[in-house]
Length: 344
Ligand code: GLY
Image 1 (cartoon, rainbow, N blue to C red):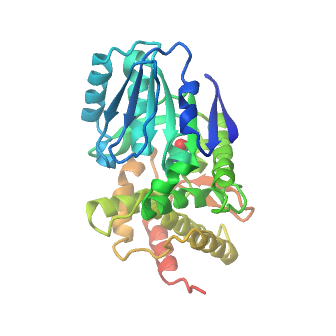
Image 2: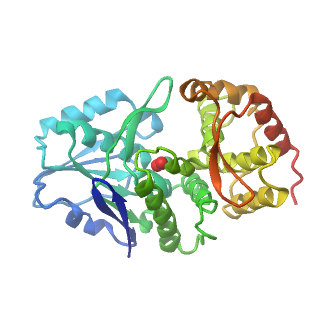
Image 3: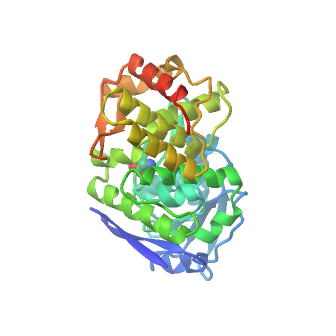
């Protein structure tokens, strides 16, 4: 088992990565927690034992559509009815939807109680469960309401990944691929404990350096500006549905083309993006419904919030930075570059 500490201003917490770890979750609860609520989903095929502490399992709906205030209200009512006190704890057992909801509830119930994330998806193990971002969506966009509320501990049992559907696992690989541009070195899918640990170490470093996402933590969003736009197009039905990590993989390749169009990187670096995405067996073919107009329409909200359209982009030294003021015509040129790229 590997342990990575996330050093945040409110106190450090451990992320445990290994096999057969579900039995140790109980020992990670705060010792003074007398009652436990587990938030999970019907599709998560695991149960946790907290005896002799009384515990209650609350199920949330299966998809991203569960991330809404009505579900938070229901969870809060149930948590209160179960009599969870200020010193008790919530355990999130599942992927990012579960940890976003359970963490949000933990952050506002009694103005904040403790919670432990038990991440059972790859996406969650390398990203969502770590770093304390919690929240829900509004009809106008994803994650528009939320808090920064760090868990007391995170458990990443890689054995739970065997229960994932193929595309769900691939989606995690999309998020994992991102870390190869953040300094992880080549990640080896046959060594999941080692590879998840490398990703967690990098995530922990960015979170420790910039818990509230001033600037540095934004690098974790590499591939995500276009990734989120593509994901939204999938949800709207304009293109076929894509999982988050599948959209991020396309977003990584797109970011390389945008950097190329802006003269920030050369063709070898673009090829490296393809090599990484190919190695994780993810598609780098932009669906035809991804047009500059559709992307600009999605990014209009970002533009309003930040004053201009912003991407995380690579430069020739291999480092990433936030670049603002990206125009529709630059996005158009990058899309054209990606569509006409000669694949070897
Ligand atoms: N998912 C990016 C972050 O946690 O900052």
